[in-house]
Structures are given as structure tokens and as C-alpha cells.
Length: 577
DNA sequence: GCCGTTTTCGGCCCGACTGTTTTCAGTCG
Image (cartoon, rainbow, N blue to C red; front, side, top):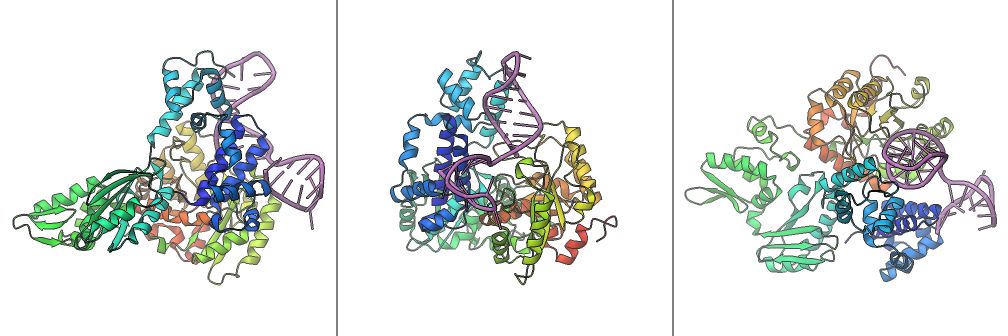
């Protein structure tokens, strides 16, 4: 079960989709989408808000507030249920396929009776869309590709959703009588970019009450299997959670075993075998006598194998065991090392919250500095102007100093055009404390063109950070085709940092790309790209991704003290302020 | 359906890309 905010967000988004599919008022549709997003991103639990606070959320007026209250009170909204009767659920599913929108989804249903992705695939394979207006050969190819991309992430959920679900489960299980410890392991603990299921671990002498608490959780829709030490359940959306209960004295061995990855565990067990030991989820044992020599903590298990404790984000069998044996395991950057966020938005462009609110929330996170980087004019939909950004700068300078320990930086997120140019000439860019530059369009250019444009952006003396480098959206859009080696070399040469974007649907560049970039001596900036106060916390997923790319503190510019950061932002002798 | 230094009506995200419907609709950011 999701937070009420997310439930309402999903419901309002569904209503907006239904309006679009049935050809309703486009402005009404957008009003619902806007409200859905605002509620989903709202920092407070909407179930705790009174009517007045509810309507204070931007985009929520009388009618939507009434529907939200109706939902919170009764669990349903009559207007939504009514419009559902006109459109089979599968038609909405079609809309989620990239290149299909409400119009095409409705055409498929009305003209061919197609009401699910499976039916669509069948029809495509059987040439069943021949002659259908708007579905030529290229469109059909694009649809199939879109379905492919979607299915690659099939059934896996993004890190933020998985984390919330796991948090809720752990909190509930930990309250069970006799439960000494509870934590999540598996790919979520390793912070893989998507999670296929959640592996939970609990320590208790008597597993029964713990299992009981688990199956009684509100999020459980179905119990798949229930045994004395292992139970599997499914949520209403079909997502699986497994709970394993271990004796408290085997906690460390169990956590090590169930964190994986499988490939990492095989390497570790090989070491155990060579030392005439045996490692299982119950502990590290002497092979001959069967005597247990370590199990209580992960540190103890690794230590008895002659290894330092290896952070979970590194346990992917990418050479971490060999590096650990040589004593050359990098100490990965942690969330505590982060001194500030260098890519964030406000309601001046597409953010939800005001400058003041964002700054206050950033200060509450204990940052030493914080950059506001709203979009620039080239992203036309944002309607940015020089006047607006200068007015924002004035407000920001006035705010600077209100939060004693945090300094404010005024930045912008520029758009990199197909040729590698960015918004605004150099004399205007010189007025910003820092410039992020990112690709937002022309994803289809060929490899040479993409490489050229990104190198050109790095060479711009005012561009400090390349934002979401490949522009991929997990499960939605593959990244652009680009020679990353060439771009990383240019970034290192020009003193341009590469962002690790922490937004859970981006995590861009991904871990493998970061590993590649390190070889060029690239500097990084780990950012939330927050569009609301509630998203500042996605920094943790950026840090997790950075760790998976073996980044250390010194390689990350926003772990540096402000003076060192400012020096880096001057980008060499060309630019003096 | 929301919103208001344009305040209870009349605007609201605009422009580009893509494929195809030979003049534009649909999708996307």
C-alpha cells in the first residue's frame, strides 16, 4: 500500500487519462495532471491535512479537494468510477507504451477492439493494424520498440517506490513481539536501479509472531507461501516481498548471504573454501569440524575471511573482492559527505515549491551550500526570461544568510541544442555562480552528432556540470547514442563535472558509465534534480549510484568545502570573477 | 478544473518532431 499522497496522485492521474481518452476538455485534463503531480510531491501526508491546507496545494481547488476528501473518507471517488465504465482498463495500459497517447490508444480500441498490450502485440504480429489510419509501418515498428523498452524493466519497480514499501514492511515487522532486528537485503540494499522483489530479514528466536506480523501488514494482498522461516507475499500491484527469519546469532551471516549479489557471494565462498571454511546464511564454519567461527555481524564474517567489510553497493563481482584482498577497496562517498545540492528547481519554472520553501528544506538537511538552477529560455515551455532569472537572483541574494550555516548559489540549467550551443551569451552566463547544461531534445541524433554536441557543451567556459548525461528514463526511454569515452575525456580536460542525477527514474549516468568515467579523471556532482522539497531526499539514490560506480569523496565536487568548489566553478584561468 | 498586480471570466505550455492523413494529428518535453 502506498502513501495516501501516491494513491491520490495515481487516482487523479487516472482520471486525467480518462478525460484525455474520452476526448474531454484538454485544460481540465491538465488541471488534474497538475494536481496529481503536486499531491504526489507534496511533503506532508495529505491524510493529515484539513480542507484549507489541501486547497493551499498549488493546482488543488474546490472540486479536486472535494474528490480527495471523498477518497480519504470512502476509499473511492464516484466521478472516477463513472468514467471508468466508458474505458476498459487495458486502454489506459496502452497509453503507457511510448509513442502511444490517448488518441491512438482509443483508436486501437474503437477500430480493432484492442484493450491490452498483449493484444496489441498479437495484432502487430498478425498484420492486424494494416489500413488503420495513423499506424503506418514506421509507427508499428516504434510501438514494438516501445513495448520492448517497457518490458526490459518488466515488473521491476524504481528505487524510491521499493524503498518506501520496504520501509513500511520493516517498520511493521520490527514491532512484532520477539523481533530483535529487521532490515532489507537483496538488490534494494545494493541499490540497483530497479528492484524485482524485496528481500526482508528478521532476527528472532521464535519466528512465528514475526511471520504473523508480516502477513498481517496492510500492504499484503496475497500470501504466496508461508513456512516456519520463510514467507512470501504479494502486494495489490503484484509486487513480491520475501521474509526470512533467522536466529539472532546468525544475523550477520544472513544479511551477507541475502544481500548478494549471487556473483559476489560465489567469490566470497571461493575464498572460504580455499581457507577450508564453509559460508552459508547460518554462518562461517570450519569445514571439517563444522564449528561456527563467525555469524553475528557482517564485519566479523568478512574479517574471518581476511577481507574488510565491503559496502553492499559494491557487491556486484566487479573486482571488489580482489581489490579488498589487495587492500585497495575504495572508500565510497556517503550521503554524510555531501555538503550541498547543485541542481534543483523552483516554481519559477517546472518545480512545485517556492524558492523560500526549497531553501528552507535544503537548510534542514544540513547543507553547507545550495544551488538553485531553474531552466533557461530555450526550453520554451518554461517561459524563462532574463528578467525573471535576475529577479530570482535578487531574492536569492536577499535570502542568503538567513540560514546561518548554508550559503546560496544562483545557477541555471541550460539546454544543450543539437549543435552543442546553450541559452544566453557568455556575458550573461558569467553572472551565474554555476551553470548546469543538459540535453532535453533531439534524442535521435546519430552518435557523432551527440558526441559533438556534448563535447562542445563541455568546452563552453561557463558550463560547469553536464546534467543527466544520457537522458535515459528507466523503463521509458533508452539513453542517447554517444561516445562516452570521448565525452568523459572532454569533461576531464575542460574541468566540467558530470552529474550523477539522483532522480529515481533517471539515475543518469548509470553505474557502469561512472566506472568508465573514473578512468578519465572526471569530477562528478551528485544532485537530486529536485522539483519539490520532498524530492531533495533523492540525493540518497544519487549517492547509491555513485557508490556503485566506485566514486570516492574526493572525486565529487559537492563534498568539497565551498572555497574549493568555487575555485572549480571558475573553470580555469579563462574565467575570472 | 484552476487561478487572479489581467480577480469571478477568460485565459491556461509552446514549439518541435515524426510519420503519414499530401496539409496535419499525435506525442513529447
